[in-house]
Amino acid sequence: MTPRKERRLGLLFISPFLVGFAVFTVYPVLASLYYSFCKYDLLRPPEFVGLANFRTLLSDPLFLQGLWNTLVYTVFAVPVTMLTALLLAFLLNLKLRGQAVYRTIFFLPSIVPVVASSVLWLWLFNTDHGLVNLLLQPLLAGLNGLLGTQLTPPGWLTNPACTKPALILVAAWGVGGSMILCLAGLGDVPRQMYEAAELDGAGAWKKTLHITLPMISPVLFFTLIMGLIGSFQFFAQPLVMWPNGAPGDSALFYALYLFQNAFLYLRMGYASAQAWILFVVIVLATVLVFRSTRRFVYYEGDNV
Image (cartoon, rainbow, N blue to C red; front, side, top):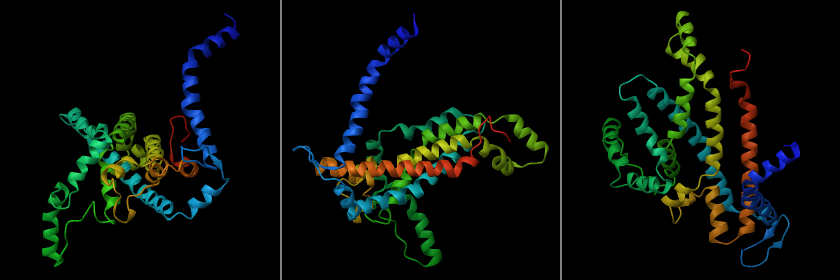
């Protein structure tokens, strides 16, 4: 078979993917770029307005609020979830009886559907009857007796200052995927490196700092990038937990406001402009992380 026939045969076999990719990915992306310069409500033909959508966004208080909420959530949620996944991986990497059972238990929350887990946390965060506040009551009572204060259980769902910490707790609860990645990275660390370090008198902390973390740094870097992208697209949990909006718009995230503009207010051109700003922000943040962490990530082929 000639190279030309092989190429044609290959294109024939991958043509279903190419057609689907063009129709369901390439076309929507290009269409959203065009609509971002238009006034479009899905009911009438798009009307080209140039940069008007982008100028309006920069003066939209809800857009700025959503951007601020997303940035604050990202700054705190990404490190917390990464640290939680790493600590769980260290614990589940210990040689204990029933290790597989423990790993399964900690992984299960990550496969619970988002809507179901959000409804579950609505009950857990209930101010009067939620399990979280019931567990906090003895601690707060002890602090009140010790310090002479009048601390009360927080209103996770009603206090604007508590909505983002509540969502960060929800995110930390579902780190099973990142935990498995960290476990796989820990399993690939050569045992002889630990043995050599022990011969030199290194303790557990030094072995972790100088061997374990550098060796699993590609995994940590991957979870950082994916966590960063996911946090900018954070959407489902605040929509389910506050269907009518959180107090003070404290849980109005960027992607949630984008969804409202597109499918509630039918401002598709406005939402498309917002989507492209989000795309640029994610790209810039990803490039910044790549450049700032490049020298901290060790790969097997690197010279040391």
